[in-house]
Length: 250
Figure 1 (cartoon, helix red, strand yellow):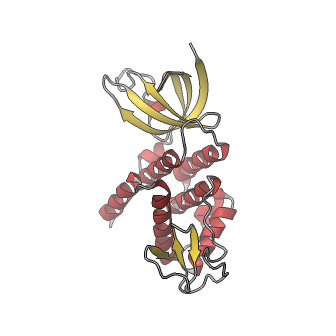
Figure 2 (figure 1 turned 60 degrees about the horizontal axis):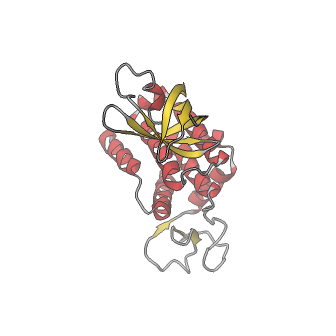
Figure 3 (figure 1 turned 120 degrees about the vertical axis):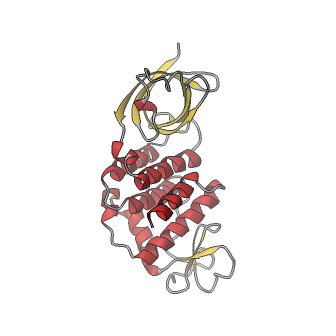
């Protein structure tokens, strides 16, 4: 049998027939992997905890033609606090959904793996889960080659980022007041630009210590939503869940 072992984060776990589940995993060595865990939904299965979404687990896999098969697995970190808080669970789902949507099968990227695992760990303890995930969004697109231009206008090259500056998802960065004539561009204040730069440059462990105004948080949320939707060509399902949680708590 062609067996191999990986430590991976469970990005997605989907039910199949006969108590089986199809898993989408992300590992440092092998990148994104799709595998079947047979009989894992049975109450007697010892694999159940290790194959839940967000879990960081040790897997022994057997290679298959289309899908690999889980022979053994053991949970290393299962992040129980994420399951006990709807908002944190929503942010964790958003993080795993982004990695799934922005990466290809079998293309390893150690930085992406580290970003994801670090984010799940921070979400367990973070005072400000929203900023932790905004930091992941920005760093993830940057690592994958889509770093937004924040030091000036992407159209004319002007370094002006004052009043009237907007963010254009299609152009991949800031657009100055003189160039911001097209529709589909999002207001982006000087504070929001400064926060985005800090998120790209700071130690990720410090991001939830930032003091960010409500206005800037809203701008940053919309900017990243539009940019990620443009990159993936779909609106992440986890965003619908987060919005429903916020409406229910308001």
